[in-house]
Length: 129
Image (tube, rainbow, N blue to C red):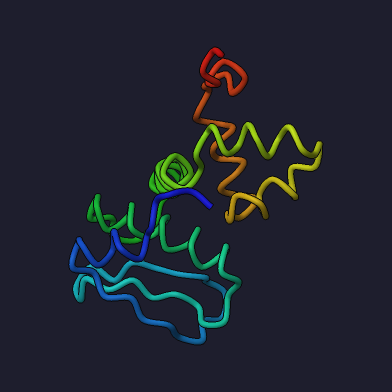
């Protein structure tokens, strides 16, 4: 996993995190109470990814969710959660993108958002020896 800690970030922002049995949604930002509600009993990587996504909504004061806000939340969360050097290491060990997501501690959606919006040539990020 990367060094970004969404739980610490939420705490620094003064956000409350609560866990509830949700039907269709995995999480949402409740502006009025400065609270992020997460579905209880998610995997660690899903919970971490959803929390990072919802923090972006909180930062921008999003109310409701339109597709532009959802794309932005995934893009920013992916940039925070995925370290490009770690990604390069993981990619070198396996051709399986599903494995990459597991190793990075993120959901496949967050990994896809990273590749869609963060265009650093991973091989070129390695420092020269």
